[in-house]
Each structure stands twice: as C-alpha cells, then as structure tokens.
Length: 366
Image (tube, rainbow, N blue to C red):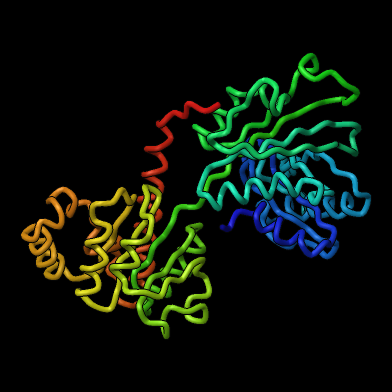
C-alpha cells in the first residue's frame, strides 16, 4: 500500500515531529491537484509532493514554521507572478494548502484508513477545519469506509454531508466545502470540510520473475500499482531481485494464480520462461473478471495457444479474444527494457479506460 497517509502512519511510529501538508483547493492552472500531500520534518521534505518548484518550497517554509509553533494553518498561495519577476510562480492559479502541525493527533483516522485499504475497501478521509485565526486552525479527521452507514446519532457532524460523501465516492475526486455557520455555530471565523476519497491501488500480478518481469515490477511500482510477482524459482523471486515488489509468491505458477483473488481491479501480466508455464497461468485467470490479461509471445505462439484453449474447452473465443496477446503496445521494442515499457504503457492505457468506465457507476452509499 503506497498511500501517503499509510506511509505517514508508519513514520509517526518514530515519534518525531512531522507536519502534513495537503492541497485542499485549487483555482486556475496549478502544478498539482487537490489531495496531493507531502510531509515534512524539521529538516525538510520527507515524502510526497505538492508539485515541486516554488510552490512546494513556499509550502515547506510554512510547514516548518507551523511545526516549530505546533500551530496548524490553512494557507493560500498565488501563482500569478509576472514573467519578468526572477522569483515567483507564473502558472496563473491559486492554491489553498492545509498544514497539519500535529498529525500524530489523528493516528486513529489514519489507522482506520490503512485498515480499509488493507481490506481493499475504498474510504473517504473527512477533515473538518475550523479557522480560529489567520495563523491557526483546529483539525478533526474521520475515516469513512465505503460500506459504513452514517446514522443521525453516529458521527453526527458527518451526517449533514451524506450527499457530498456519496459524490466523493462515486466521482472519485476530493471536495472542499465551506460550512454554513448555522449548521455548526461557534467561535471559529470559518469552518470547512475536506472530503478526500482514497481507493486501494489496482493490483498488478506478474507471472514470471525473469528479466522482463523485473523491469515491469519496477515500472508498475512507479505507476502506482500494488505489485505481486509469482515465480517458482526462489533465485529469481526474492527481494534482492525484486526490490519494488509489494508481494512475492514463490510457488508453482498456475497453482499460485489459482489461489490468488483475481478481481476486477487486477491486471495480470504473463511473462514466464516458457509456453508451458504461460499456459498454466492463463488457464487460471482467463475466465476471471480481471481488468487486464496480457500474454507474451510471438503471433505463431498465440495462435497455437488459442487453438489449444478452444479445443480443450478451457476458454470461449470471446474470453481468449480479451487477452492482450502479443502483450504490450507496438513500439517496435527489441530490448528487455523496451518490451517492459510497451507493457507498462498498455497497462496505463487500459487502467485509464477502465477508470473512465467505472466513473459512470453510481454508489448507493450511506
């Protein structure tokens, strides 16, 4: 799980002061989107990004001040500097960043989020922000699992925002809301709610830990997949060869894929050392709901394998036709690295298409 809140939770175990900065609102052209986060120690950036450049440098200065004062704040940054100015960002937009100087106070919410992701359930991190003064805000966080019901007497503040929470889940994007004073009267000058949907990473299952598999593992990790590599050779399937893998399974390849929960957010890449292992892997997932199945091999090999699968009744023509084979986008690749890039590009393309299709699916929600 590569989510930044999960990584923050791990870092908080060291019991060192940290400041968490999150973009909650943008207007115009900006280097990052709402939900982009980074956390800082007294020495500077530790993890994440707010877009780099001048914006991140300015946010870091504010975060270090907040960390020193132990005072959280909601800061506005303008990116409308003139092109003739030596300093200043010229993107043209505006960014509002929440700087949490005491994220350790919200460990329970981050832990709930981590557990939700571990169970592969989407969640929404709800952050209430009360602006006490221009230089200080108070923060309350709560994690909502997708199946959680918001009863009137439970999580009462959130029960006023059921429709907004549904939208955050169904549209898959954050919402920054200004709360009307009549809903929650109090001394705060302004009140806001930031709803940030957090989804489990799509699973990339790589059958084969050879040279191509190793490079695809690295690229898959960079491209925000949760990567599982399966191979029956411990000399290949190990952390030294696969440092970027989230999970490594050393077992007979067909058996391991049979036991793996291949769901609709799984992307299966079959690149074993031979057609026998390729066929065993494909047999175990070809009838699954996987978002993607890719099979390496020449056109002749794919034709022979298709014929075998249809003759043996292991798959229907329609099931075999949804397999991306030969695997990858045609970029005239020759080397191991080029083949891996062509596979990674196809994964990104299919993932984008799949996510676009799923945005149309509405969630009944709480």
